[in-house]
Length: 138
Image (cartoon, rainbow, N blue to C red; front, side):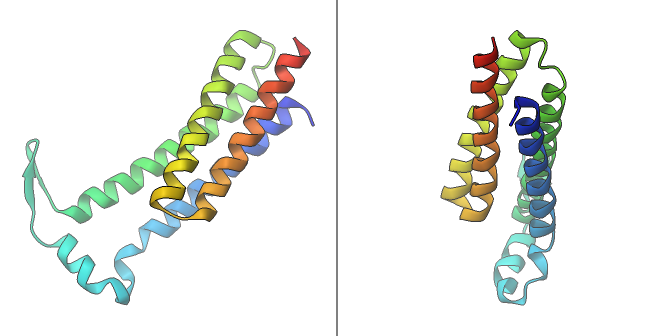
């Protein structure tokens, strides 16, 4: 499989990850089993850095920020797949994205769940293989 195809697979995996992540975290307040936790998190607002927010605001904000970052990774992988003739820049971006995706998966396995980590690690694997193949072609 070519580096271009591997990077596009990695990109689509991260886009799927983004969609599933956004769907998953968007409904966290609706679960009746979490009623007490949701109540505590949506309760008191605390001043921080010039704004008043509750813990639910921060949780939502981190969730949306993660979705935005996942889109950034997906788009970056797709864009770099079209720029493989510029080997120097492409190789630097591919290696950077592969390392970041590996750490992203580590974060997900520690703080979230294995399915999310597996998508990130599969994307990282595709990206590392694309990098190795691009190096071989040089």
